[in-house]
Structure formats: C-alpha cells, structure tokens
Image 1 (spheres, rainbow, N blue to C red):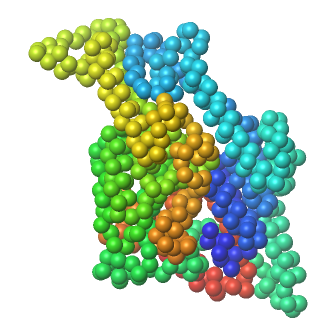
Image 2 (cartoon, one colour; image 1 turned 90 degrees about the vertical axis):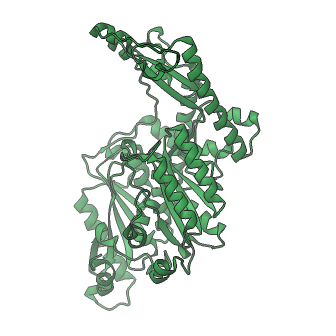
Image 3 (cartoon, rainbow, N blue to C red; image 1 turned 180 degrees about the vertical axis):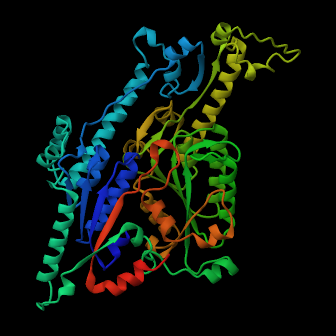
Length: 535
C-alpha cells in the first residue's frame, strides 16, 4: 500500500517464501499486489520454494521467476482424515464425545475404524463440498491474475506441474533465472526506462538505481504518503480526543478460552472484554474493526465476548473482518458486529457444539490402578473427576442436556443476529463448514473482502469517504500501559494488521515476505530523509 502511493518507488522485488497461513490472507496479499500494479508500477516475484499459495502470489505479480532447482509444485486439493479411536483402544483410553451438529469434528475421536467406513457420510460429503469450493476459488484467483480461462486453469492444476520449467510452460512463471540474474534484469530495465523517458541529457545520476530493503522501508511515515492523517498527540494525551476520526483494530486471534489466559495463541475472555469495554470509553475511537482468526473454543468465553461486542456496538459501529478461519466460536463473536467481511477462501460457519471426556478404565486396569469413590448423598458429585470409568446413562444424559442447551442458544442467536427463521438457521447449522464465498451466498456474512475493506466500511459508517482520513489504532489486548496506548499506534503495527497479522497459533504463523524497492538515485537525499533515519 505504501509503495503504491510512494512517488519514489518505481518497482518492487518480492522474495516469496513458504507461507504457513491460510488462503484467505494470501488473497489479501494478492489484493495488495493488484493495488500496487494498478499504479502502473512493476512488481517482480522470485520463488525458490512453494506450492499453491506461493504460486498464486507469484502469478499475481508483473513478472515471476524461479531458479532451475526450485522446489515448486502445483498439486491441487485433497482431504485427509485421521481417526484416533484405534490408537485409544490400544492405549486403553476411550473418548466419550458429546456434540450437536452431525458435521462437527468429534468423529475423529470416536469413529469406529474397524468397520471400514471411518467418518460418517455427512462429514465426508461436507468436506468434499468445501474442498471443491476452495479449488473453485483458487481457480478464480489464478484466472484473474493470468487473464486465462477457468477451464484452462483447472486442467493445469490436474496436470500437477512440479518444476520451474513446467510452471513456465503453463504461464504461471515468466522464466527460470537465478536471483542475481533477476536483479540484473530489473536494474537494466529500470535504467533503460529512465534513459528513454528522460530529457535527453546524459545524466549518470538518472541511470543509477538504488535498492532499499524492506526493513528500512518500513520506517517510512504513512502520513507523508497520505495513508493516514497527521496525529495530534497533544489532544490525544491530554484531552483524550482526536481532531480526526479514529478506527480501532482489535485482534481476535487464536483459540478462545475462559479467564485471563496467559498462553500465546489464545483469545482469553477477560482481557478481551476489558479491551472492548475500554474502547467504548475512549474519545479518540469512533469505530472498531474486529480482526477474527479463530477456530473457536470455549462456548462460555465466546458468548461473553459476543455480549461485549454487542454492547460496544451501541456506542460505535463495529465491523468484523474474518481471516483464514472464523468458525464455531470465531463466528459466534463475529455475529455481534454490524457488518461481517470474509475473504472468499475464509473457513467459517461450524455452528454447533462439541465437547468430550476421556475414560482411562482399560489403561488403569492394565496398570492395576484402582479407584473407589463414595458420593454420599450427591450421586453426581464425582462425575467430572471419574476418569477411571465411562459415564453411566444418567450422567451421559446430563452432559448431553448441557450440550443441547448451548447449541439451542447458539442457533437462536444466529437467527436473531442474521435475521433467519428457524428453518433457515437449520440449513446452515449442524456444524456445517463453509468457505467465505458460500457464507456470503447463504447470508452468514455480508461482504467478500479483506481487512482493508472492513476498515473502509467502518470509515463510511462514521461518515468518511476513505479510511486514509482516519487514525488506525491497533488495540493491544491485555496491554494497557501508556506507552502501548500512545506510542505504538502508528505505521508498523497497523501494517501488520493490514496485510499479514502476526498470529500466534501454529497453522497460521506468518513468515514475513521479504521485499526490496528499486528507487531512482536522483531522489537520494529524499530517500535518506524518509527511509534511512533511525526509527
């Protein structure tokens, strides 16, 4: 975004590294690349290792190269299931699963592997539909980047090109070159363009190019590029207000849990609720955007955070932006927002409830561990601690009743928040999982778009025509020092939110994509002023 606005930047060289994140955030990166290219600037990608996601990013660039020995392949999409009931049987451990929603994932613990069927037909069918829609969305991305027919792209994926030369033949890469050859080519092209487009004078300074690495470029002020208004820190600190509107960006990233948390990669209910309550009192915040990337977790914590989101919505507009995953409890929280945005490949839905307990009865017998419990007059008092035996029928019914009541409450709130009838909710519930594209079609989300689109919507809800006229205020959940509040609400943190948020749970941790900008030396003094000064 910054390089697109920056008049000093002519081209960007993008080293695409393996991206352990979902396709949704890859879509956001591709969107940023397309915005950059719309300014008629060039972005050149170099890929040494990658598969579907990395190839999609590279294909969106003006040119894309890979070295001869690159580990690149386009293998397509498939589903894999791991069933653990056999392992549990061998270990003497039995899982007792309680769930509402025949499409929820508890079958992985409880499915009978010996019957040869594995997962129920409903689960396999829903997984197949999800896979096929994810593949269709991927084809859409490639066809738009390459301006190619969708059938052609589908045929290319089915062929599974597995080398750099194969990808060049399929027009997914421009050529096979080493990194130094690509850099030399960029320098030659830029010098040639400057010479051809110059005033005819033999000015060597206009023919020499300079490379700025991504770490130095991050120090550029977004205010100088018109991506954010000038900040009045005096008003913010002493008057607790801004002369320009403020949009808070709240990260909801990780597994949802009760209490104060403490583990990385989790959304703890207490600090999250405190952060949302504090936002409602701030005079420098006019709208809030929730950046949700969570597979769910505690039903109690999800409901408590949802309530806080609803209360915040009475004070200001609240918009939800879904990342790679916003399912189950993640979707529960998003329902409290005025608008919900999702990328076409976001995984969402999973409206259902699941819990389980483990019985170690057989294992304890093997180890000759015996337990004796005297419940006295309270027959259910030892139920939660009775890991040495399965639950009896009465105990099972009690747990099952709690799960049913949680599911009924979830379904009721989906109907209220999304204006669905009970029949409409039923067709979307039962633990069904959808892509963002499917969720938009069935009304679970309002718009297809990334975090920037959600921020733009929040700006419009407070009467601004562009988010660049608003102060973007990242919220550090659980961190409330004055330094975090007033000293860190600029460029670098916002940049992470806008493109690739720094998630803390394993399947979405982001390896930063290295980038370098090629800049004309005739602006060297200005480059030094903006980019080379200490932060």
